[in-house]
Amino acid sequence: MDRDTIIAASKKHNIVPGRVYKYGTAGFRMSADLLDGVTFRVGLLAALRTRKLNGQAIGVMITASHNPAVDNGVKIVDPMGDMLEQEWEAYATNLVNAPSHEELVEYFIKLADTLKIDLASPGKVIAGRDTRPSGITLVTALADSLAATKTTYGDYKILTTPQLHYLTRCINTAGTPGAYGEISEVGYYNKLLEAFYRALRGRRVSGSLTVDCANGVGGPKLNELLKRHDPQRTGLQVKVVNDDVLRPEILNLDCGADFVKTRQRAPPNPKPTPGDRWCSLDGDADRLIYYWIDPEKGFFMLDGDRIATLAASFIADLSRSAGISNQLRIGVIQTAYANGASTKYIEQHLQLPVVCTPTGVKHLHHAACSFDIGVYFEANGHGTVLFSPTAIQTFKTKAPQSPAQKDALDILSALADLINQTVGDAISDMLLVEVILAHKVWTMKDWALRYQDLPNRLVRVEVGNKDLFQTTDAERKLSHPIGCQDEIDKEVKKYTNARSFARASGTENACRVYAEAATRSEADELANKVAVIVK
Ligand code: 16G
Ligand code: ZN
Image (tube, rainbow, N blue to C red; front, side, top):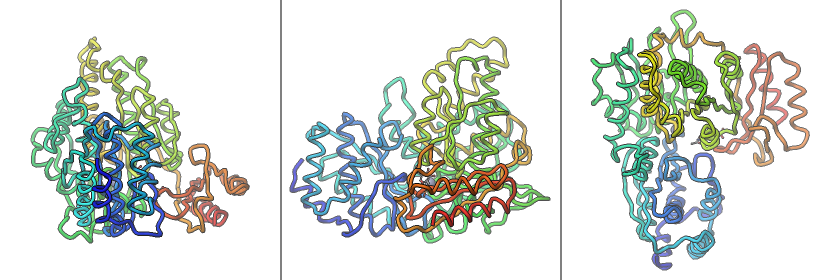
């Protein structure tokens, strides 16, 4: 690896001076025109990371998810398809903030030295991007840094975020007992569909499902999956809407999972007919929100908490039917944003343990790994179910004592293939929900009736310096500024069944305040009072 080559390549991809960049919960994310130099430097980090991990492939995803079309982002995927190891986030931040090209290369070489990385060894990086046009130029910046560092590079072009995670894991497990799947986009569709058929075990999905794809990458990719799906075999009829990726400016505009979750209403176009089953994906297809229009009560949303409770109850039932419930520990991971009613339902009704972690997929994913079956979902619709090697082994080797036990074991086995084991995946999660509703023979209303959400309110508060707000107890309490939490507690005490917390956003320069209470007006009032305290 040659210093001058890297410097020369870097000079083609400047960072915008005077800005401070930080590798946050979603990597680097901002206005796309600020990202050229950032992406080049992320390439340098990926070049180090792959070599640190003996040449295993590292993934780089270029997406800004549910953000407006003018934004973009770049994040790194570790070899098993999980998020970049936390310690390395700081290295990424330092590399990207290097004030000059020369200092950048100095730091790069110093980092290699400190981490005992042999720069002459081979390395491999693969990349994917969502449908944002800016992704094309950003990929060029990435390719340039990988060429300058003599790193083998594979461009998978347009992908959903979970597909890139899938491919990264497939490449690194190929030819091993843990082989995750065929290394191609088609391999991904085939794996999901085959598992979908197996998980249904002859049950039929009823009614049609309309999928709002946020005019993002989920549209064309879901269409690819559906081309291969045989509706005769499953009963699933899918109608794909908001799948226009030719007009980039309408990405995430008045549609998609984030719109539905934050506005608490269906996309205005096209309008759902009362009684229909709908779901929305976000701009990179890693979040999923279900909803329907109740003919009497109107819009009803089934968010990440509802998907988590549905999945946990189904899997716990199956493991009882399979006679393995005393062998495997099942747990549910949530964040402070989970509705209190869902937590209560899981603990008291499903009798399963709940763990609360800070916001951000990496925290939930990590906590889920401590169970044999870890169900994790953020309320915003991002989540998955992780099956440990022990769990998968048990499904395969346990000798069934009855046809019912065999049925349950086979379904569990199929779920472990259907559910993306690397990261939350809207398309995979959607097939999971359809399987469960088919098995339970549930309508949307049946699903909605499991528990009643506590009214809640989320407000965004502009603050001078969000970094002053530090939290403990999985973000449920403020440790700083001193005294702030006492004031919040004092307000919360005035309401019944109430809860409220404030935290600094990891993706925007603002604080978020969440409040829930027994009634809508109390939740609103409490949120506003806490917002005043934080301001
Ligand atoms: C990021 C996180 C998401 C989290 C959100 C919170 C990942 C891949 N994404 O999008 O999980 O819910 O940030 O945003 O970890 P906030 O910190 O601005 O509230
Ligand atoms: Zn997303």
